[in-house]
Length: 186
Image 1 (tube, rainbow, N blue to C red):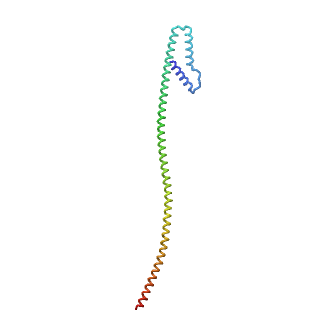
Image 2 (image 1 turned 90 degrees about the horizontal axis):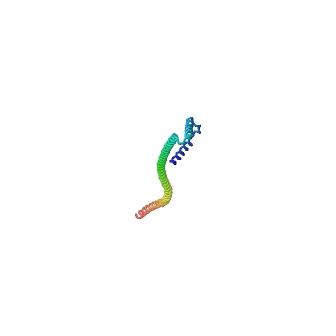
Image 3 (image 1 turned 120 degrees about the vertical axis):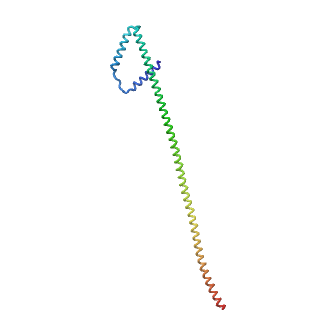
């Protein structure tokens, strides 16, 4: 019981030290109570074996025990309340941490998704540029080939026109020769 008493003393001390008010002078009621206690002690000090002093001691002991019991119950209540508060705080912090962890995971997944999309787009762009350059090269080759074909065809056209003119000349000569031969044969 004395360990409870020391705890309760510490509790009351800490409560007193936590107060923000400056120390005040004793109230008039406290002065009168102190005076009554002193007068009882003085009257009890003269005859320690008297029944009044025994009853005073017994009532003081009973009051002390009642006060200790009250203080013990108060400290146990305060400890229970503080334990409950800590438990509530812990549980709320734990749930908040879980919520934040899920949000973080969602954000990380979204970030990874966006990175993958960005890489894919960059790759497609690079492929397009490489495709464009390869397409341009192919088009240039085809154009050169077509230009060569056109120049070859132009040459062939020139040859064809020369051949046509030669053919026409030969037809004319042949017609003239046929006329000459027909005149000679007549």
